[in-house]
Structures are given as structure tokens and as C-alpha cells.
Image (spheres, rainbow, N blue to C red):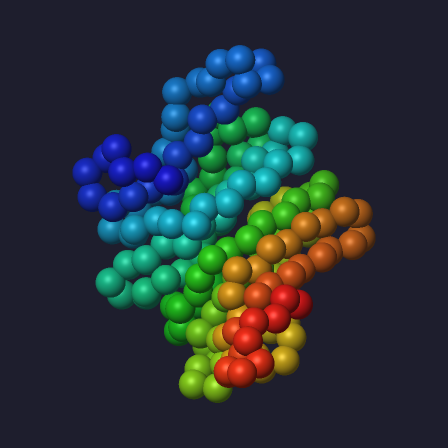
Length: 171
């Protein structure tokens, strides 16, 4: 994330093709000057580079956005909004294995009863996406999802803040 351009913070990528000895100039990935960006995450598989982030604007609130590169980060697809503007979405997490992309985030669509972690995936390199799937019980407050993928296995954890005196739990 960087605020080198006028306006809000945006997502930039710098890539190295020599094991980190040097880096190419940064390129801007996010494309809307009216959206404040935070919580960007990156995952790679061979020459594919996938990026998700949380973007906030005055109309939709916080939403999750995604874009990808098929040429090692030289150029990127046009960003797409993955989540619905009906509710607000926060703190995305990203995992990639081959052509399968997995995204999890925190969503407020179940308020006032709960803040819940949601999941969606793409099995075609980010061209199309599944419908979103709510995970876990109607938790009091689910936060900070983390996701990893290895073959057919996808593992997801998050923190749940319960009403005191129960405290915090990890799922």
C-alpha cells in the first residue's frame, strides 16, 4: 500500500526476477482514485500473481477487491469487486494452489446478530467466482481470517471474540 499518488492509499507491486537482488519499479494495481485501500494480500503460483485488498469508498463502504497477473507481475487484470455492496467486508486473506484461488474475509451482512467469516473460490484462475459461503456458527465477532491451500486441502483459521467472560477463541 502506498500513497504516492494524490488522493487515497493504493496497492502497488514491485517485483524481482533475480531472487531479490534488485527490484523493478513499482506498478499500481488498484485503479480507482476514490477508493481508500488497506489490508492487501498477495499469493503466487508459478507466473500467476494474485492480489486481494479491502477498499473503502463513500458509497459501498468496505469491500474486497481482486486482480491477477499471468505474466509474473508485469501487468495486471482490471480489479473486480468480489463482495456485495449490500454489506461491508473486511480483512481479506488469500491462498493459491495451481488455478484455484481461495479468498476469506470478515463480513457484516449477518448483523446485528453476528460478524461472520465468509469464503469464496475460483477454479479457473480468477475468471469466475463461486458464490460466497458463510463459515462457522453465527459467531459474536469473527476476525482476521487466514487461509492456506495445498492440493485439495484448504485450511482456514480466524479469531472469535466472545462476550466476556468467555474471551477470545481461535477457530
